[in-house]
Length: 163
Image (cartoon, rainbow, N blue to C red):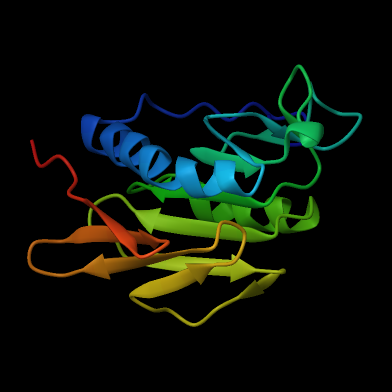
């Protein structure tokens, strides 16, 4: 619900769901070590407007004190959008910035190319980023395309579903 206007999106395909689940599994230990909770499809809403102005990122990481019954009002540490052809992932970024997101990571479902907005500034395109919110490095690996999440010297490699 964007400023009272309903936005309905189709059910995500298997590749997107699996990529999101794998990212959550890979990032959860780093989040917990920082006292954060990572969840899938959690409502992020404008304080006082939980029924009429919210967005639902694929993944959201925030402190337990930031969470309410309906989701997270205002700021969070990290939101991750998995971009699919024709979706509204990019259109959500200004809302997330306005709500005080520390970091916003967009990952393309098909190519795994990423872009990062940190502290309200879009960073130059890169094949890897350090996510300050979680203390991890995430990188795109070519041939075949995969993602590598490195934390405390250990690397989890994510190979998306291809079917």
